[in-house]
Length: 417
Image 1 (cartoon, one colour):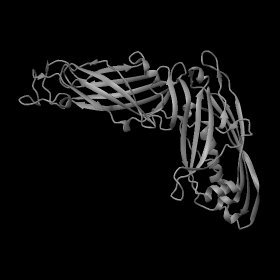
Image 2 (cartoon, helix red, strand yellow; image 1 turned 90 degrees about the horizontal axis):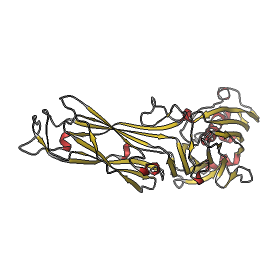
Image 3 (cartoon, one colour; image 1 turned 30 degrees about the vertical axis):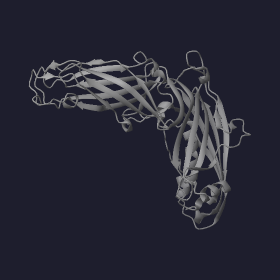
Image 4 (cartoon, rainbow, N blue to C red; image 1 turned 120 degrees about the horizontal axis):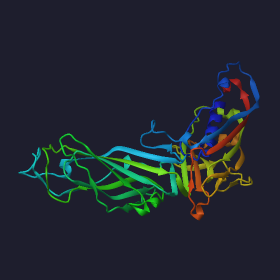
């Protein structure tokens, strides 16, 4: 019982201090208590102790490429963190889809067959390219975003490739579209079984507004892509029509960024499967955060009823509510940003302190009102974001976390086995 409550409270605060960049659930269990087997007698008292004394970096909580091939983080030679997304063979087009031959022409087509000037336009599947699933709203600006297409081509005619539009779908499903009118010629194989590769970089030179297209924060990304030719061409060798053009996409987002009221969120299930929570009369967490990131944050934790017993999504209570505390307002617990110099290097790392207590009455009330989810949110702004300043997130930036707990309990030992 004690393990469940302590684990639950600890994880919640730890999530917020990491700005929910990635979930990392750890069991801080008190196994020595759970393993006690005693005859029934009444216990009353309290226990206290440190839980965390650590320094956390962003890289520790974002997947690496080995564990997640579609989203990971890496640090470059200048110690700048990059967010990366890669989709191998994201789109595959066959020759007979781009160039359908009508009788008397057809496939297999011998060498010398004239291939007409045709094009094929496709829209990619948004469900395959999800972005920022933990972000709820806000504006996010990257100084130097890059989208790289790699095309492996087996089609032996001079073909071009064009990214007609790139569309970002925000959380309210409003599409934001940006267009590129450039035709990029593709390398073509000159002999059977050869694959010709072409790499195309889309950056702020190709699309000047690319640095703003991640704002508002998108949930899905899709592309309208065109492939084809502009003139009739004879085949250099026989083809079957099954020759392929395979398109892979690499998105590189260096964290030279500006965050403008970006709201992040995550949800944790809350399990009330036994009655022993009532033996905890109160639990108090004492937390100290040393913020080594140039990000200003307001954190809040909500308890919600999302079961059939209550209205789905009904907020029952919140954790950081004492507005008499210097760092707490109606927005939640405020973590001041680290300040930076003109080169974006950290100068000062401010500390924030808070104590949070849950009483037995609060715990009982949440259980009786069918609280089944914990909703964690963080509202983020980069340092001097309102002035249009960009900040660099480096690989050695740290979040110092110290946390201790004091829990008071009373009950029979038979109730806490």
